[in-house]
Image (cartoon, rainbow over all chains, first blue to last red):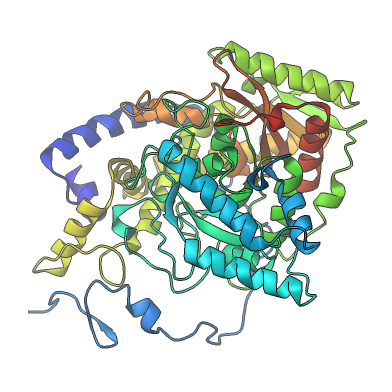
Length: 88
Length: 486
């Protein structure tokens, strides 16, 4: 559970950890029924495609990041996002 | 004489275009209705009165100048709060986006505006559209307008309630596993999940990208058709949208189902279903038969695996989609001294219990050692579920089923056990896995007076048949004319 939480960048408190362990056990036990299905030579479906994936020209179509976008920043410095120091 | 807020989308727009009523009057009436009823039902998270009145005034000026503002001219519409609205906060029902204000409109928002609609506000939903009752919203409680002790269904609960309660003439929801159809059924309104690839998701906050679709909710099928026509079609901003042309959905509502082959999947009429729901749906099927439809049994043998398949595929995609909420560029941030701690603290405080549960389940299903057993297996079973439908549609033009095994359940009734809540989606979820269009519409009430929902499922991109069946049924019945909160 801690390994999965670390992969998901979630910090769980001990009560959450206990609850989620029980929930996931219960859910995965019910989902184990999938193993009964014979999927030999069955292709996986990642997405139901309507058309072939189209290509487009590599040109900038969106307007540049402006004040409306930066206004949502939790912390900024001019036109930059501020974050805690990454490299010591 | 009916009040303005009771008018259909078609009638309201027609009156604005004929200058019999102003868009401002329609909008003021909707806002007054919201003021009078929303304390009781809690459909809206954010109201945009200033923006709505300004948009309505602009419509009135265009009409006065001899212009036609479009098929939704002056019609007040509400939008689920996972759909971006420029300058109006868009929260996804989550603390992590509580103060997020989009810099742009979603394509569907822009298309509503281009068709003349007046967007009155943002509607409550389960956090990131994850849920079947709207109880997972971190920002408000939405109640069923037929019984305040019951859930509206979810995740687009606010979208269904606003329409049922007469707060707006139509709304937009999103449907990943039943999130338009379940609340439509629980609240007694019509709601359509379009074919995967029919409607753009650009600017729609993603939950599970191979399943998510935007669709309309309204008080009758013809209104659903009008709104679908306005929002559907190719979008250069979303490469999953088909380039197929958009037909006149309203034009296809002939009221005729003579000779249409309608299949009843036997796996959708199972033990444990509320008896009144089964009786209501069977009566609706008899009605379609009297209208000339040819009803026959079909089988969708992999139905029993749909819940497991869906909750593995959807949570895997969600765990990836929600990785973007890291407190760096927008949304909530819980400041810490290191970047890693900041991510973890922000996500711990910003996400609710169900969102964390799904992120954990999805991360697990994708993780080394479990990927083949869970994620890949689910994708393979998804193929088998699709093939079940392909086979059924070789014989049938449409399938008819209940939307859910029960009518609206009580607030708090299913929150203790996530798996029980997941089972609410048992009849809606396969449609998303197969990418098909499906309509929910009212077909009766139970002893407590709660609406029962009928589901009509169609072939890919055959919204026309699905809407035609629903509309023909409505012409022969009056369930869709019942309203709560008189």
